[in-house]
Length: 156
Image 1 (cartoon, one colour):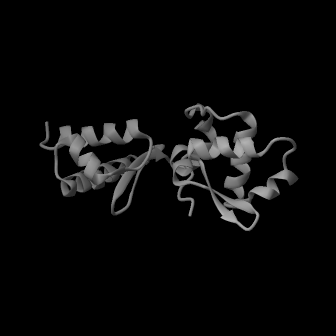
Image 2 (cartoon, one colour):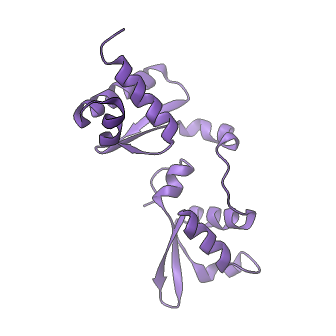
Image 3 (tube, helix red, strand yellow):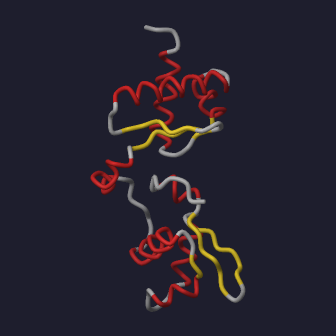
């Protein structure tokens, strides 16, 4: 066995199980290596996945990394993703807010009938949207948690 393979596999397993971005510090702690060594191992792992040209890729920046399905395969396999505990109407509201990147809560009444505010609260409590005061209403935006959970890339 090549030296470092156990650490590499531990980091790979951590990224797989997390299904979100994980800091190099946390990856290093999981593999019992330094933060810098974790960063090097992620770079090595990324090269291996890129060489395979498979359906899964390592995405990383200066502080964190994740293991995710390549975008061209998401439409085919997204139905297998983890289920959310959101109601059907909350899911539809979330989809609209995500598609528009941001929108006023008062605009939702043009798209949905009935009680809207309870569903917005449900989405805020789940951590999928943030609501900031904007005049007499609230400006709704998808959060980073939304992007990570649904593998939608950066929200900002």
